[in-house]
Image (cartoon, rainbow, N blue to C red; front, side, top):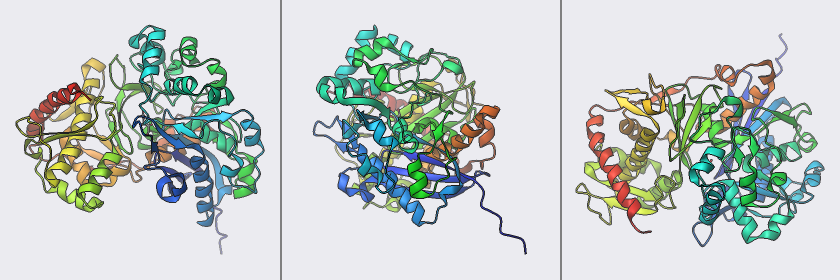
Length: 561
Ligand code: XUL
């Protein structure tokens, strides 16, 4: 009888996202062999988060407890162990984190990280390691003062965009650090190192401070070459030279460069896993930790965005990525380097009122049931009989507006919609906004065929919409997406594209030196599946409606807050 074959090596991809910690293991053939998750609200109720965050009384400040993330890691590893997961098979791991969020390590924390006792859970060893226990996250919009100051300090919004890739955004880390420095200078002084959520997570595995990666990156408005084309969503990095910009650093806080450390490429092997995980969970001592990156670049790798595609991630934040060959200046959105193709770029639009808004309306009008929600959606007509709605529970990024605004077919404001109309208005509105604003970045449809737009030199011979994130499991929602964009919608088998992309990046990290590209690594992965095609006649319905939506958006914007 043939001896049973040894299970081969595998790779872990982590995602420290807003509401959950998620992990996926893939084998050498890129098959998913294990998935697990910890939901912060449900599994760690002692931290009192809602949707993984705490919204403060001013409604603008949004934070997450840093020890919650450490405890979640401990918990998920224990869960994997009790599910019989064999950690000794893991050859490399990488991960992603929600972008922009920051972690403040107290003086001496690196020494504690380097000598973690395997007898204690992570959060217990780390409890004295942070100078700030509540980390600001990407949903925070409390730093308008700091944004104005930074833009002024470097010579205006455009100048800041030219240098760092973006005008000042409230959620960007530099402005968050500036707020902490001005409001709590003693916290800043006690801080030895500032990490992004992604590099914080990498530090936990490495048992030492991990560098911030170049690809947790946004750079807008400039055409750059690949080698110099990365920076983070921080408003701090000089994107051409890949060094911190002294004027930006000085405008935010003193001696900031030292606290941030030197950034590193996102495919870099940072080192071997900390002995803590070898002793506690049975990891192999040769297991490599590849730099962690932002959730959006990781997602792009996971869904294998190709030339001509649009990706829409329907998660806590809704994000939309476009494949771009030659980025041109735009006043909204961001341009990122494609982590898949060195010659390409991705444009990114980010919406704050994604899943949480959909879940709120589902809870209020559909008894918390997606089934009931979907039924209501399919029972209403395409175009919602001219009813249009804007649903911004928190201050939106695109457009900068807040509140719920409903308009009937005569463009009159009305206070309430019937349940079914409200549900369709929410979903159609979310997708009309994405279509309108992606068209501003270059997406366009000619005669039913999605093609490039010339202004931004986007080449789109055969556009596919690749949907990912939690809501990409919902067929009724994806049908509306397909109708509004007049394009076919595809999904991949897992909604966790950031985890999957991270697992692919872990493999890539190991082979990168042999000049195998990430594109070659992901070639083995299964092709996305077609799940929705546009219904007949939808283009005629949405053409006038999109125009109206755009005009109504101006009204919503102009209304005093
Ligand atoms: C992107 C952004 C969000 C976060 C959370 O700019 O703020 O997508 O990365 O997922």
